[in-house]
Image (cartoon, rainbow, N blue to C red):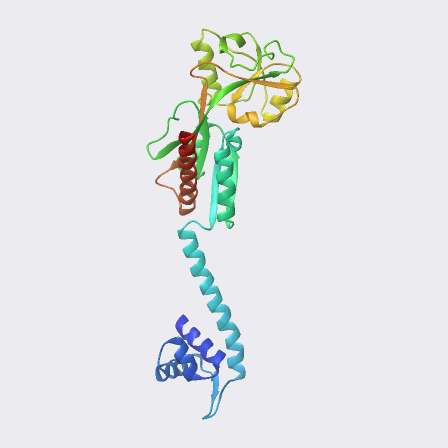
Length: 306
């Protein structure tokens, strides 16, 4: 039994007229009648009562009609699912994040747009350091990752990176801090002896870039406290327990009693990168990356035009 036989049967059962059914199916009536008789022969039951004046379903035919419709609906669903999966409209997207990823407008807006255009794709997010993301993207445990570093991350040959945005680092301090009276960018040398609160970025990421800035200025950062919650970090700054240095995208976290000043140093920059495995990219991953690249190109063009 083939699906086309079921489609023939359903059409005849709907019309209860072989001529009209054949016309709608785009075939002539004799072959249609022959196919229905072959179907009845295969089933071993009569599906239609035929007379010169009318065609009607038998009891067995009425029961078979419901099952045939369900079978065809399931077959159509299977075809639809397969085709949608092939173009990335359904499936799962596993994404690794740096702590500040979702505060980069390009990324958060792309995720929102992708969610709107691909509502049947399940999105999962995991915050991980660069080393863990690199390993997970290489193995396929993650579909893509967002990492923060001044320079392009070191990656295996099959894992590629794309720079999405670059922020200037800034200093966050209590509004009564001795350095909070000005708005101008501040040289890193001026915060060399200040107690610092920091997020535990891994050695390849933001914290390493920050250490490099201090060392380049002939200083060592005075790392006083570490916290794994970004809101806690800024809360401690707001309490006056120390200062912190963060990427510029996190200025969007407005906290009372906290004053921001950009770092003036030429290399006080931090970039956000997306990494993905060219060999393991699913249609869903490619659909997301296509949207992300398109929006990044638009943002770059707008920036140049401005």
